Image (cartoon, rainbow, N blue to C red; front, top):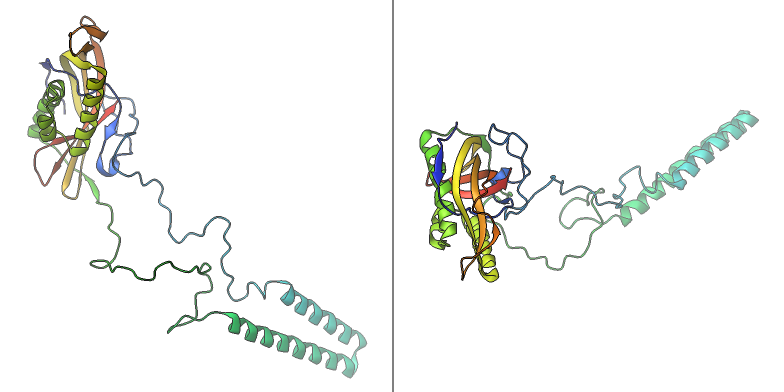
Length: 302
């Protein structure tokens, strides 16, 4: 899907960088398109938390040793090995001398081993802590630590952690594409006029915070960023998807412009040129909630 050619005369929405949110795909690279054939780096400034690789909560800590169960610890150490070796050694001696003495020696060794194992089991069971009002503690659980506060506020509902919204691809129509085309001009114009009210209508609260921060930075430096003769050369849709109540669409935009910085008081140019036009390719992501109006939610350099 390709936009028609348009020409506008507004200031660019910012001087560079990749910021904003793309839902669950915030830290994923958008697919390449004809307008942006190279893979675009993920957003590096976002209020969306970066979950990263999922780590199991019950995974043992590095260097921590699990509590040994039956067959471990006492019985996997030197005592059990000593009993077995001693028993075998006694059996060999008994068979070596033969006769009744050998049989008695072997019987004595079996009784001795059985008695020691029985005593060890009794000691092990006495030392193992039991859970109040329930079965014995799981032998594989980590060593217990005293809790600072045993009172917990009960959770509402089932108590299960909320799952991430399911992401599924969707299709857009020409009305959506026309809206994106108009927003390219409208957002730039609102930024040029430093119209915070218009920015709130056109962008998400997160984007308003970033754009307002840049406007405040320009004002502190006593300059104004102006971009003239903005001409959209080509645009297409990289991806469009749904996450619960929210729809997202990322569009690749390629346009030319004349970018300058001017003194706010005198209007004198401090950086850039009115005569040289530069070409810019960016990814703009739009979001709408419950079928409402699209709003700009992220900008990425391509």
